[in-house]
Amino acid sequence: MSGFARTKSVALVGLAGHVVDVEADIGQSLPAFSIIGLPDQAVNESRERIRAAARNAGVKLPARKITVNLSPATLPKRGSHFDVAVVMAVLTAHGAIRASADTVYLAELGLDGSLRPVRGVLPAVHAAVLNGHPRVVVARENYEEAQLVSGAEVTAVSHLAELLVMSGADPQLLRRVPVVDKPTDARAHAYDPIDTPDLRDVVGQIEGRQALEIAAAGGHHLMMIGPPGAGKTMLAERLPGILPDLDDHQSLEVTSIHSLRGDSRCSELIRRPPLQAPHHSITTPALCGGGSGVPRPGAISLAHRGVLFLDEAPEFERRVLDTLRQPLESGTVTIARSQNVSRYPAKFQLVLAANPCPCGQAGGAGNRCTCTAQQRHRYFNKLSGPLVDRVDLQLRVPAVTYQELNSALGIPPEDSAAVASRVRAARDAQHDRLARYGVQLNSDIPGALLRKTLAPDRAAVHSLKKAMDNHTLTARGYIRVLRIAWTLADLAGAGSPTSDHVQLALFFKTTVTS
Image (cartoon, rainbow, N blue to C red; front, side):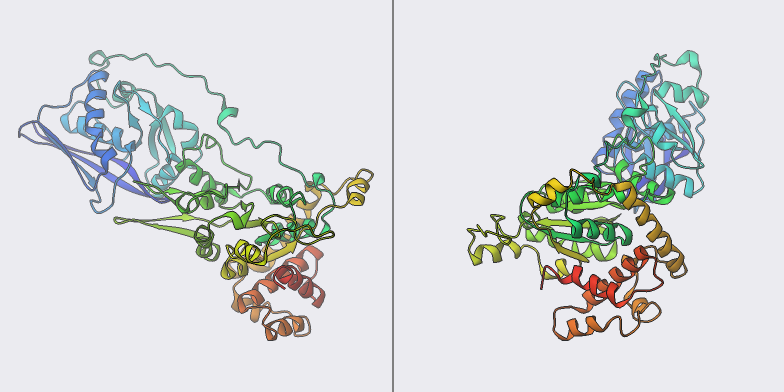
């Protein structure tokens, strides 16, 4: 007896999901089981998992030639989440069950017939719903994550036998496997940030706190140079705490990226901007994404809509740092492979921190630096000019004095909540001004818009003309100064940047390089 049946699954290429038709045909030839349609090793190995799982669920695959086609055949198929879609298509073609051709299956099979969770369920379910296939079957451990997609009709299953009964199989013929609902503590899987570091802990550093507020308000990149113990790391770690919550679209995007990494926090949407602070020994694939088989998102994508903090930035390899240049401009990272190209979002705020020299003692009172000029040059040469030019705010962070440390005991510094309220007000002003142009933040304003429609008056930008004539400011730097000036105006509640705003923006852009 021959037969044909079709089910559905999803292939992920980067963060983009493509609905795949899983077609099964049972012929009259000698027993064989082949899977075609650009499957990877994990998909090919599913044949053995499927045979054992079906047998342990109480059914056997037909002893005939089984051909499974994953369509479209030109799209690479990677991962074990096709297992259930394949076995349901094969058993439907055999006549043992009646699986719906419109249901999307996303789960791996164990040899005992259990359904096991897989990575990337959130973007896969989202793609299924967008393509008009809201009915989805997942492993029980992936249920909360799949439910995050609005409009999805999710069915969670623990064992293949359960799914076969739902699809019309005779319960008397199946091997009954007791279903044990494992108690899950939602709090253990939800994104529950540890107490966010508060700005009230930062003593002194008036300019540093101001730069942090400007960075948060306008979405600008920041670089801080100062001696060890000055508070650079403390400031950087407190930037996410003054950023606004993510909206629904941003939360879904960020949570989808973490789902691809197999993050257990994905049982609910991530609402707070993430912070990634990789060690300086990180490799290019770990930073930008990659790996064998399915390219996975790297640290810059995990920092999407949040902060990427590179402490001791000159200790990173220069070629690793320079890979940031393209994502800083485009907001995406592209990972090319021989068979496909994966793209991941990488719209993050970059924060760089560095010592003034390898020993950290250069500058300030009582210069105790033991570094040679050559050592200093080699140290900062890791930070290429094009990379530094893409950083909007640059400032020197001096060491905290004894007077500042003790005066803070009487009057506590301003906390993150107060700063965050001003940041929200500034972002609301940006939204009111920029929404008509399809722009969200001042850091995203196109140069043409800043030179024409949103250009400050000539008197306000006179200092910028002098800086460009003296070759202390590039054309890219000119645009970035104007973006900072608009953010300063928004924080001050002004309608447009004044000369004071432009001069302060120029100070923050050139204070390190001048």
